[in-house]
Image (cartoon, rainbow, N blue to C red):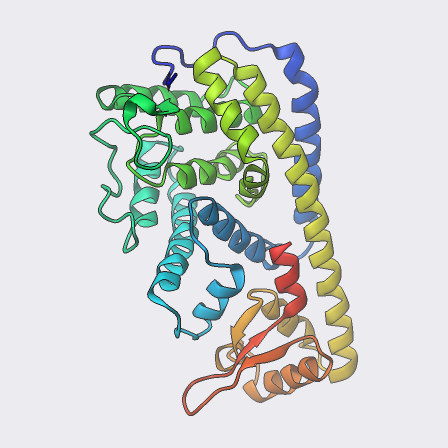
Length: 365
């Protein structure tokens, strides 16, 4: 039997706060440890960039794209010799990154609201396979979730009816901007409610996932909106779908929140390990390159190296304030040491493309 959206039952009324308390405490502690480490290291952006790329790829992969982190980076570095299907997949990943960055910029001047979500949605579907599915606009037809090609009568879940969307999204917007609730609880409920409403014709999953770090950042839980749950949701997809369904079928907001908070805790621990590994690698390479090159600019080159695990050699040497020849010499040292390697030789005006394998491995773990 199909489950329909819980119209008139939002926001939640019967949440077991006693049952949620330990989950909130554990998730908050793990998230604080992760953000604290990013806050004490210089230039945390060099560690955030690879993680943002990983999230864009993972969130898009959940929706069926096949592009890897390496595919996207190599394409951006200048290797455009890819199939049309691969090009479309890469474009979807890039759109995801731009949508997150644009939403963040908008939220510096306004709260998280339908306007931000609609604009992010418009960017997400621009020039890709969903561009004919009303980018930036709420749907006007009833949609449903089930086996591809199935009838609504056979649907597993039927989202909010189109006539109720404006009211549902207004209630959602009011809820996400409340300041009288624990932020992680509010984020958990907001994500589930957005996915339950399913306001767009396409792209709901990706928009719903990107709002998680945006809410955490806006509420002051994160210094940067860099915390993503797509990896966890992808790994636990069956439980994720079941918990969301139970919100509408049984009103089980407590069970959903416990699942979500467990996801935050586990992913925060994993992210903390990952950034510690990246930071240790960064510091080690700075020391090694300084010893081998005798240059005071070694740290600048290594930080640049961490921006992208695959890069164009000709673009890399354009570091502000540094002689390109000096940068080339350092790249030569790093290549001789096995830190980087060439994966595509340059021809004529086409630059060589290089890879930093250890960073790529950390990004794709």
